[in-house]
Image 1 (spheres, one colour):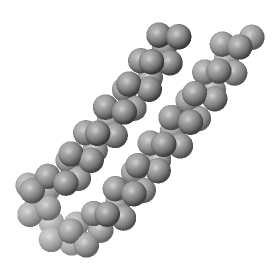
Image 2 (tube, one colour; image 1 turned 90 degrees about the vertical axis):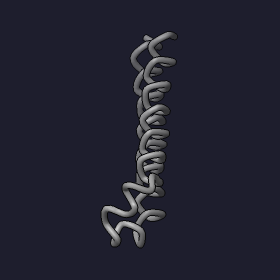
Image 3 (cartoon, helix red, strand yellow; image 1 turned 45 degrees about the vertical axis):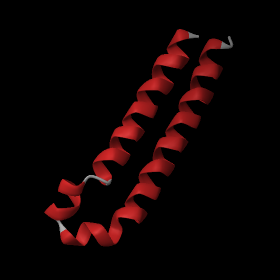
Image 4 (cartoon, helix red, strand yellow; image 1 turned 180 degrees about the vertical axis):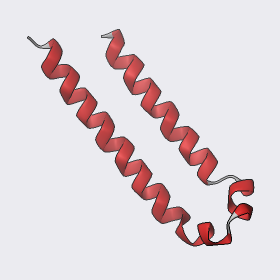
Length: 66
């Protein structure tokens, strides 16, 4: 059970860090074109993280259920 918690915690921390970096003023001022794509990029990354969490949970449940 601790493995589930560790993996989910790691993915959540990575998702939060991605959102913080994506919305940082330094990141936005570094590339003006990034401002135009920020929301689209964050939605994609959040979707990727969500699917990754779901896949990991399913995989771990299938491995440890036997």
